[in-house]
Image (cartoon, rainbow, N blue to C red; front, side, top):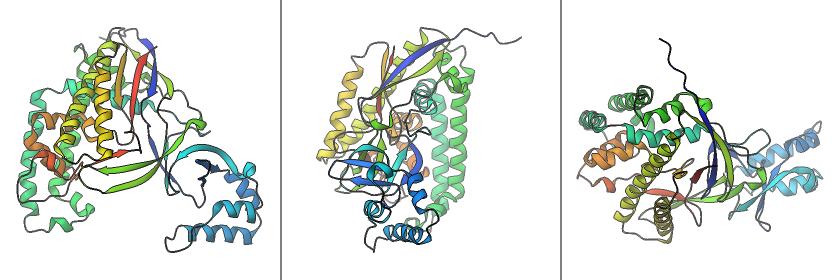
Length: 404
């Protein structure tokens, strides 16, 4: 008998960024060839490569100077290559000619710039796959029953015992990342993790009779049912300094990212089978986010250092928790994109809340921490994740969804 095809309803969902959002495309730009940092006006000017190429065409001497400038600019032991000076003085290009477009840049200095997903015209957007992944995480948190997570915890525990035997006599601190990942027990763990994720996917397929499962089945299996967001103007992009803040040490790592800044709204289309399902979905997302924030706050509270950076994180998380309690049925808050946070992963949070004694072992086997041996540690004491990513005034990746 053929499966009944139910009518679907399409919803227009407004997505509003509450904090900067960075969804990387894997690319990087460098200040020696891709952009000019205008410190006085707090802008980054992206280079019109076609205009530069036309000037360099059929002029080997200029091409050599350009290539040598880029090579020397990438060498930390040499003087930084002044791209702006080269374009204006050597190539005689005006800013109007060599600037493709400009964006706000609240940064201290130029460095490698991590880029976000954009269309061919440079306009950023939120991919449907990113939204779908966040919805799937929230639903998995509800669909995975205690037996499923208990079975997985037992397997993690068993593999960890084998892991301890395998590394006996080895100086684990000196193992390279490649050597660590090639351990037999790590390979076994990766297979179990893949199987566990597949079991979660199967739950979505098999949960048609589950009142809550209907929503996620359509989202997880049929990609067109969650569209990409509408494009956002490239002029809205903001380049930010992101600090990798250590929770209890003065060790910060700065990286440069393009971002969709806070208070930017766009829309996407979501199709579900039944009108009432979307409100259940939003409630489950809010429950998932609220519980994850609670776990994160517990970890942050455990680490006694209360630096200004940590206080920014704590204050903002508490604010989002309070906001969730006052949302309407047509609204939800979730986290997406770069550094959405370790606890915003269903498996990790389920283990943390139900099997803390296995949680550290899970982290170690995931290569999130290096095996330390010796004394038994509280799950909150593990070496990872002790860093969080923030801008100078905000956490990252928070968005609000609303049915319109």
